[in-house]
Length: 118
Length: 118
Image (cartoon, rainbow over all chains, first blue to last red):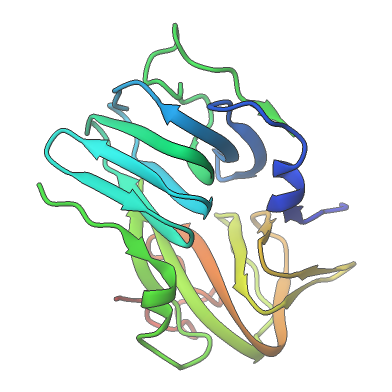
């Protein structure tokens, strides 16, 4: 079995589009993803799963209905299952995300981005 | 519900001991942990779970029986369930780890470090 490491900066250099998560590894049935974000995403929640964000570069606001969590590089936040949230990035930011494989990024399969492996 | 972010550098500043994982967040029944490592850990495997390593500072070798994966900052590796591995760090390195809550870090509850929440 040949196993390889994942260099996150290298993966991020392979695409430029925003809000389009790219799968870089699998962990116990979860997709580990990198994403580039800028601007406002949609309000959504995931009934069945927590949502893990780790900032790799830039800054992002995770808006909740009753507070806003501002994350810089090296900061992480877990949105608990069922909690409505909206990510907003004033400038481009790069994130690491973990979600169970198959989780729609908008909380709704009809509006979700497809997640491709890079 | 008041939710807070996790600053990984801040968490790492709170302890100095090696090979003693500290829980900083929970994600769907998994412990998200930071750890400081230096020297050689024991050969072990986890029959039931993958093992995710992300390097935050320094460098670590993940020795497998048939190859060695050298990870620097911003590099990640998932040891598949059942695969024997031994982490070795020549100098101190800081890592982010994810494992299902309750997973013994040595693969054996008798020799495992206790994981505390910080």
